[in-house]
Amino acid sequence: MSIDFIYAVMQEFALVYPLFMSYLWMVGGITYFFHWEDRGRRKIDDPDIPFVAPGISVIVPAHNEERTLKETIESLRALNYANYEILVVNDGSTDGTAALIDDYAAQGHIRAFHLASNQGKAAALRVGALAARNEILVCIDGDAILDANALLWIVPHFNDPRVGAVTGNPRVRTRSTLLGKIQVGEFSSIVGLIKRSQRIYGRVFTVSGVVAAFRRSALHAVGYWDTSKLTDDIDISWRLQMDHWAIRFESHALCWILMPETLKGLWRQRLRWAMGGVEVAIDHFAGLLRWRRRHMWPVLIEFLLSVLWSYTMLILGLSLFISQVMDIPAMPDLTRWLPSWGGALIGLSCLLQFALSVVVDGQYERRFQRHYYWIIWYPVAYWLLAVFTTIVALPRVLFRRRRKAVWKSPDRGEQFSD
Image 1: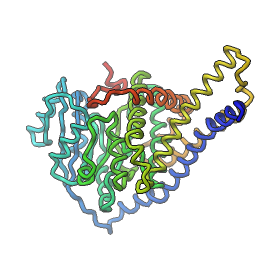
Image 2: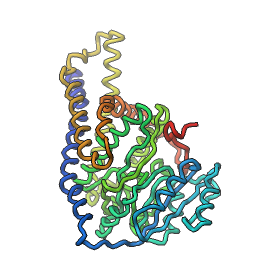
Image 3: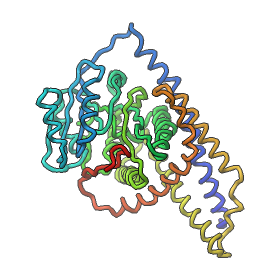
Image 4: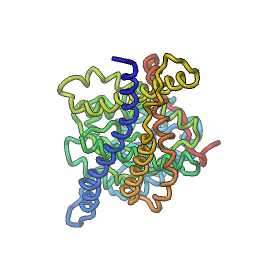
């Protein structure tokens, strides 16, 4: 097998993989829209179908959320649901979060819990789950705003006893910079379509950590959240599904979230996500090879291909640099394999993908299509970021010392910058 053949295969993979995934997500999104999304709206709006409102416990883990938590709690108090409680767990905050929580608790609006030191989001969620009075737990971040009707859409899924969790539909509300605008498109044309397509083949890579509902008995069966994991949401998703609990995506359960609007903040967030995915895949790899867990193989294969693609891009990039810049004759001329139509096809597919998301997700907010222009930056902002974070994440996880994953205050956009 010649080196020329190897490089040719690598370049074909580098081009075909993102295109294949893009069209897979689009087909999945269209299928989900007609099979569940549109039909679900007609069903929940039908006055002849009785709605049963079981008790729900909304859990809000909070660490140094003084500037955002009030807005979150007020949105929860305004939920269009008759039977729910709000639990706020203060995880060792050093700002005014504790006082704010106590004020609401004194008025009888919430139940407050305080941890003496920073234990991490997973530990705070554990406290909330153990203290909750209801079987269905809805967990949201302390800087998020849950849509008033979200619980009405989440609850019916738990009528199926096989369902262990339901993940909501996060919507980006930080849009004052180019990075913010790009992420609006990303969460619709990528995250939203990925969740829809994964719902089609029955397994979800991860619930959205910012908004997810759980059956408490399912959590108890798998041991609740792991306090040592970098990304508790990915880990709990895999463990629930490995234990044969189903996870569903509910596109109508909207939750408005804050996202980083600086390169540094975005890099830190995506690197943590990448490291969390690598960590979970390594920890559960042996268990997933068992035949009884073959239902998780599509999720595992999809993740492994993404890692392989990232390192393929690294090798090709370094080889191109060496062959062109350093002019080493022994290196193959990679430019002869670069198809002239490749970049144009990827760009066209990107715009087509976002056009689909405008149709599918445009129903949830007005003038959503005005963000269409900014998606031209998506190939650079998303795929390159995915490549570099994955490349850095793998060795970091392999050599990381395991310890409790505690909170670190994230970048929440320009309106909350110091």
